[in-house]
Length: 326
Length: 255
Ligand SMILES: Nc1ncnc2c1ncn2[C@@H]1O[C@H](COP(=O)(O)OP(=O)(O)O)[C@@H](O)[C@H]1O
Ligand SMILES: [Mg+2]
Image 1 (cartoon, each protein chain N blue to C red):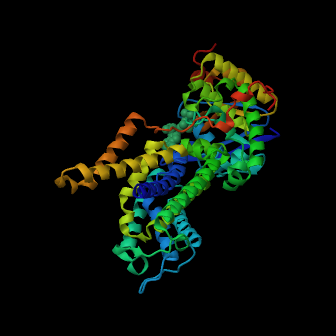
Image 2 (tube, each protein chain N blue to C red; image 1 turned 120 degrees about the vertical axis):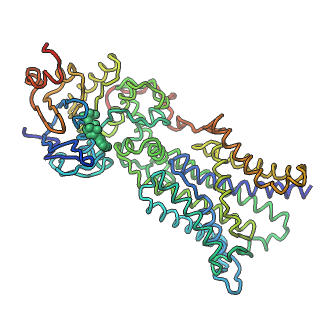
Image 3 (cartoon, each protein chain N blue to C red; image 1 turned 45 degrees about the vertical axis):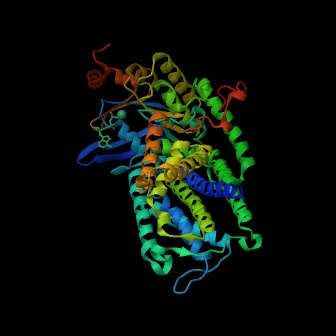
């Protein structure tokens, strides 16, 4: 029983962390139309940044400053934001094609640094040893797992709440307008450069938050965690859940993560031994199929974007207009 | 002309070796409905794009109310009271008609990250005010019943009205209309013309690109004709009516 609960807590913690990443991507892609093909780089910046600042010292290794978790996390998040800001400035107006190429490039470069800059990142074996927040105080591993889950859910709720405020405000309206038609938005006084850059940096910092939580959860990070499959999974979660809908983004994260771990479990349990070698590739194909089917069958996702924002709905106030007096 | 709202001086735009607008100098009288005519490819839209800041001129200057605005981006010009519509409508398709209109006013409190996150009360009050104004404008443009529809789902003619509605939301003093009646059914066109005349009576200056000669002759004064990037005629509608050059080119057989 405790084993099952532990497992479910483990599953939900990971799904919650991924949901935060998907929310970050949703701000960028769902609301602003910014293509980010390098999600892992910003997640990784949060993870490595938090680990280097908050981890335990190792001989011959830079970092391990043992900063309190919140400060280390803030550092990781700022690193993710700084990288996003530089990418955004360099691709100037973050036009689709440049941004797509640049973000792919950043992810490759980031992974390469993580793999090779051993003095900083521990190289291929990664960095290990992270004083997890409050672990000593709580003691019991099982209880701690539940507490950690609660913390991840609290962060997820806070990020969700802040993003909802943002996108349901005139700010979100301006982002969506830029996404729909930049020339028209400019002719109506909106500054796409500012809005795009902000949206990209904020979205990337949210991914950094998730990276920091991930490192605290595993107390370990290595280049394995930066494999392109993560970017791919996060995109699948957003497409399935519904781009432009934050509830959809969270739903997609839990569904796809469930399908991913479920299919891995099923393959390891029931597939013939010879096939188990191919578990990874089979899962890739499954997730690719899910994306394609979704794009064909329901491109708007399970929970589509709301075209009419609740807060601007007119129906309740019809009849109060004073014709022509604007 | 004593009180020009816009003056263009030797405005020129090249696309590679091709000169689309060639040294156009013009003044637009405050309070006028100025008609801009000319065959397809004459450079009318390119001229609008330069005046409204959508395209940078190759050379020449534009000034608005006596201030040089050459090369300012369109987002800056909208805030200064210069609005434009597009020949092919550019609605924000996956946004409601109402949101399309409420978007427009510049410098909204809730348009910054800080304001959106922490200024809830003030933003709500501002939104209520903008919503009322937007509903008034939509009613004025006969679009009020469509307020909650996605802007991508309304008819082409309604999109043209929406373009003007969005522009009005910024209380512009000058509006550049690029073929507002093209592809619009006659009853919507009548609405549109009435609205333009009504706004003009209230003081808004219009520059209108239009192929419908009936519209131009009846409602525009003065009329300016462009051909191959140059001004070939400038005068009143009455003068335009009897100008042999224009008769040939745009009016067909003399009426
Ligand atoms: N972005 C552009 N690139 C190249 N040529 C252009 C561009 N925009 C317009 N042109 C050319 O400039 C000329 C004038 O176009 P335009 O201003 O749209 O004419 P009009 O609105 O009078 O029909 C046309 O020959 C057109 O092909
Ligand atoms: Mg044109």
